Image (cartoon, rainbow, N blue to C red; front, side, top):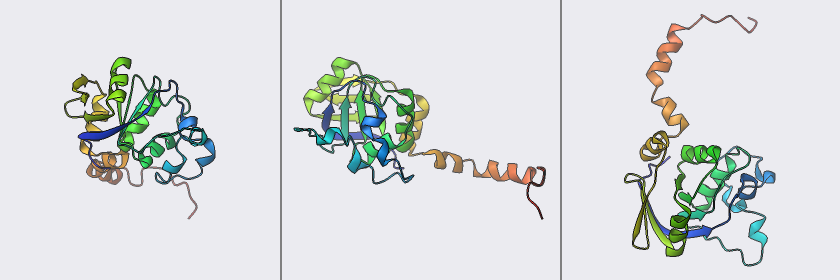
Length: 186
């Protein structure tokens, strides 16, 4: 995964509250385990509504409790595959926030009036190092879990974090080789 420092560009606004993971990525598209190819199914049912327009910009601005519902990773995968690099909302479900951070999608929580101001500005800059969103001539500070921030700034997914411990894993395996009971027939 690529490191995240600054995400800048046009904003797509979906100012609906309580957008759940089934609305983001409907269940009928969860038949694969690859992380790509989901963008075309993003908000699948809503995309059929007359007047629906959600451009694939780098930043999505959303309503309260974004990503609630089930714990499907596919929701974050679909948002990223569609082209979003950051989601700004007043609040997120805990599981969605974790899933997003693990794949390089930056979840940013701002106050509701700040979220609306960013949406109205139409363009924004999300600076993870400074923990600041800049839009419409204003700057909004945000907090983020230090572990998610570290992972994103350094481009570390779960596999990369595990590989950083390769020497310790190898040493553990050497120390415990043959210590477990035999569970297969010879």
